[in-house]
Length: 530
Image (cartoon, rainbow, N blue to C red; front, side):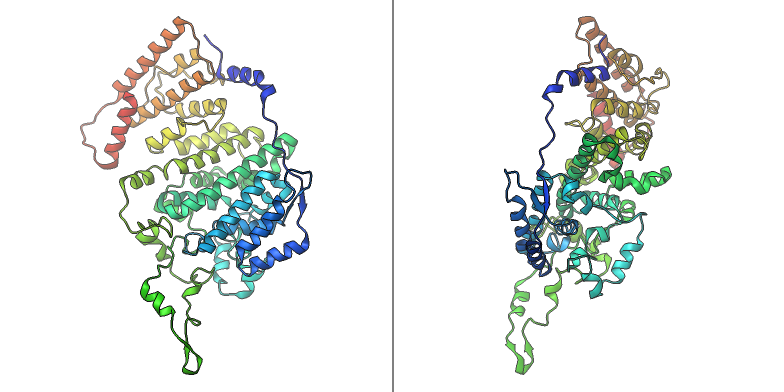
């Protein structure tokens, strides 16, 4: 009655093998001349960031289209640029256009570097490598305890800048997953910061994906040296409870519990920039008269607010104010406005589609690594068991966005395996157990389509409906559905039976629902009736 999803995929891959796009032709990499590097470093140390980055960019693009190598700085410079591109003092904590331009220039340089060169050869993967071995708050606590130490603020290799030392993202984050958890918390609770973290995470995910695929293509035995493997190394020999931290980071929801588990990377990170009013501006224009003790604005400390460490002793409570929480950036006039229904809806949906898309990409790269190197972290079955534990309890609309995405985030075989694993504990015991991994239309009609959930709640039966629709979509997308009339009639009859069974399975216990629970029940019935 039609081929399996697995067979359909293999047939499609075989027929299109010659049309497969070749690997990206990266430029060779060379070291930037020391004199030019020194000039750029001096600019950066003097906080002339845009000038320093512009020099690096011009050297990088020089010779493009020829056989000349791309000249790049050492990894510590790339780490500095990764910090500048997202640091609050250059983005959401300042109204300075120069600082905004510097952050944008740093981000654009990293993006350009990632597209032009292999991330291992350019040092970008090394630049994004966290040196810690165990998640701990001690590193950050030590750095903040020494926040006033000039010596600590300037010592970091060959770059005399706090952004290369105690303000570096690698110094302030315990590991990559701490950054992921905080950034995704921001997608729900701090839109201004999320706007910046989103770009940063997308760039890093591109690095992780290209690094993993490049290593697998060149030599599959080097996958264990990939950047994503490094991010998982400290968890590899740990128990399941420790591995759950990764899933909690990927599904961080902005709740107080999630905020406690994945707090801000930099202190007072979400505080808005200082608003300069006319009175403050006038006070800045005081006369300079040294003989009369009038020093104008030379002794004012407000100008240091945007510099790293200038306000490190301010209480963390400043990040909890409504103004900071709803800030959408220094150019927004609605920072203190009441949240719109769309904003509330977005927060309830784990940060909206842009946030969920990044969460899906993170889950996808873990699944890819599990398929390539099952002994490195978890094999696919154990990983999907972990996914099931965390995905199944998600709010229905969020759950649906993972299982019925507008664009696929897993290959069809992997998506089919995940859906079937999610279905197992949800399906009625009347459903025959299916243990194969080559789903056909007959298997779908026999083991899944005509059955309801174990429970009687609308939400449980809606989840089953979503998952069954997901399997049906995969069968259709891979060409695994039979085209003869009898098979079509059989499929239609079974699908309609399942719809009726799930609708009839839902029972009402007589209690009136209210609030979010009532809304979820309403959404669930809409899914079942769809």
